[in-house]
Image 1 (tube, helix red, strand yellow):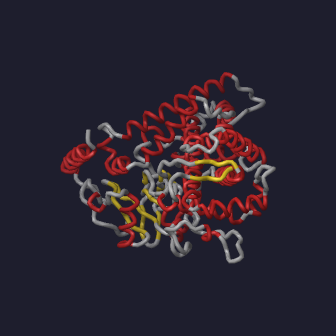
Image 2 (image 1 turned 180 degrees about the horizontal axis):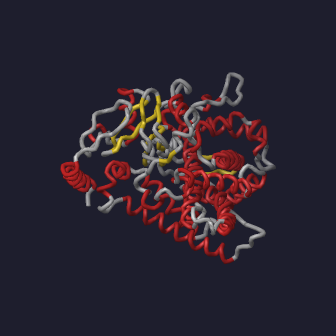
Image 3 (image 1 turned 30 degrees about the vertical axis):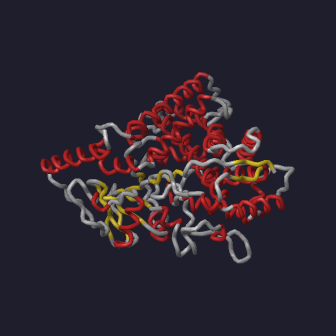
Length: 491
């Protein structure tokens, strides 16, 4: 059924519900925003380019803090570096709640480390951080895993002998194998059919979650959930990944050695056993399943998509890739593996990676938050459970911090002496209490994978740099780079 027909049906059903129930009055003193229509909210102010474009247009009229009604519910938008930091850092506890993403809500339902709230979220985050740290995050062992995985990729790329390829799944393989080593206790071969199928499900789901139809679903999920659409394909994909996780959990349970936990799943199962007499524990099977899904999905897709954008940008701006390779040759040479210690001696390369993250703007509208209590913010009263969107794109493109915010320019992160320059506006992992818990491992992956590939290969394309299009394939919750072919030429 056409999306337009479904939307029309949604509007008709919603209007009937409104006539029957009336329009509830929101308490609180919300920031200004366009006047909503009953049930439809601010649909008439939504741009066909998607939610981000719509929010940017409304920001021009209402400023950095404003209210948009996504369907019947009011959502407060936070724009600009200072605004986002004032809320997520300055009032960290109040803004630490997690909002919903309608297309995945039927699967997660506030379970697991990303979508949980309250004490459940605090318990799962503490456990996840300490366990990932125990299994390498922040220690030398994870550096060694990344180095080994990078060498596996180099050997795989040599087999192509410079022939053009779509890098999507190879870049997914390397990032997935790092999180799989921590969560499942093993890595997978790049030809493992089950592994490749799981990666295809993750890639397809992230694309669908970021699609225009999912953004429409966000406005009218209460009605559209009863009709066919991308939301059902997303649920089907995620359920298939959960089936694999469930099978892996049972294998772990059958082979568990309490004296020697192998990975995240083992450690969680031991915690479940320890707390089995506690009827209020958050360490139960459902939170295990959803936490593993969260870590597997986020740990695979975010870093691999950033790398995919990164190499597309190197094709578009070959002079940048050449300068990175010059720095690699000077600091590392060609006969040893890049290490994390090299990063401090390679400010240009580090600035390029920062600029790739800034420019690719991977999660432009941020993962939704909600306030955990009635909260005063800049003179407005946000009632408890009000949803809040920290529009990360407005920090990453903040003209007060980046001279040419819409241009790819590594100089944004270099001072007059050529040293790395930190920026308050660099928020690709968000900030505050909900900052991405995999930030450390992601930064290590990006540096070691990026430098190892460019140490061993130059990149080329059959498309001239001036003709390379950087327009995202999808732009919603996430930004998906366009598909492209790249040649890795041995140096």
